[in-house]
Length: 459
Image 1 (cartoon, helix red, strand yellow):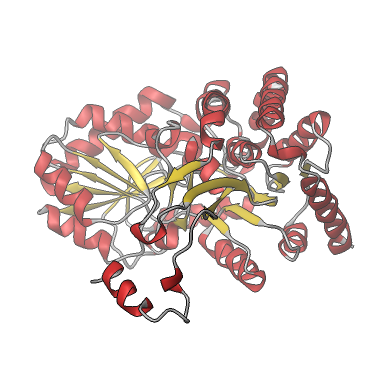
Image 2 (cartoon, one colour; image 1 turned 180 degrees about the horizontal axis):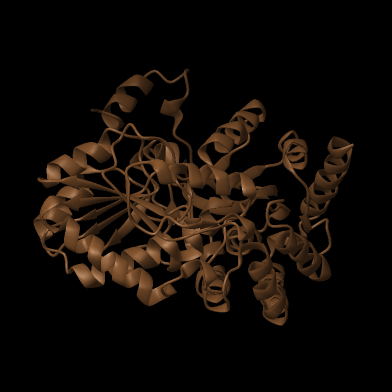
């Protein structure tokens, strides 16, 4: 049933794309402005949906989801015309008389599969890039955030025809049906395990794709870091959205000499941000499902609880928790945590921290707190990761001037700002040759062809 429904939808979008309507600057700009207008008009409903699905406060909803989308829209609308202009290419000596151009063109019909942890931002941000690049879009939001998924279907359905933008609601069976269709590009945000499935499905049809995945993102705190400020920025990055953030610090690597003081500062920051009873704080997020809650609660037996550790199964809440005396062979260190639990490990020399990170899959993000340029250069130059911050957490994702994406197991491809336009764009190379003269030496009948070629193309 789903296969037939999705096949009809994809064919409808392909037919509309081939009409050429989406290719002009005027059309793309108009649709982006329509999207902006309808999102602003539905802002209260978006905030309410995020509260119902994840218990996000209005502040968190705006700062981590809505505001970021507004910035993306504003930046894209401002720069779209310049991004669309074909670029001239230089002419090689062997091609005298010709002109080269690189022309940005849409892929066609695209599929965006969005996750549940930031169900508005991580659905709409790639949508902006896809529309700016001139594509049609089928969006598959997460079934784990049903209020937001339904709202996205209503909002986008009120402003766009489904031949241009459609929202396909449902569970894994809908995703599977969509992945079997001959779309022209796939953009997936989610777990590493599901990313492998998506990539395998795309490979069967040779469909290009972007994978925004995750992994265990380290946070290094060196001995010279200002600990109170560092603790506040770590608590912000780790416990926003109850830790359900793909780029949240997954574990701390702390210089042994400052570990105890840092833990004390983190405890203070947690109390300052969330109070003495974070679970009862209406601004503190909840875990998305019972399955995820039970998985996270099982980690609380690992190591020693240095802070937090209380749970409330009836509302799917877990206190901001620090785990001390953690080792790499414990379950909490075997997978991405994706919740409000932060293990603490120690190091004495920065190379020890670098080696621990490099012994494991490449992370999506890395955070380093230090005042020493040499330490910064060592870590940035020695560790491969998607992106990150020096002396902060999360904030690299919020600027349209920095492409965001992973590397290795944490993903492939990047987006945000022009990166989003580039991701959903095929850059087509075109050479226009002169008809005023011809170089006969390139033809096999030329007597001196090889001689000229060797002269022109010598090593």
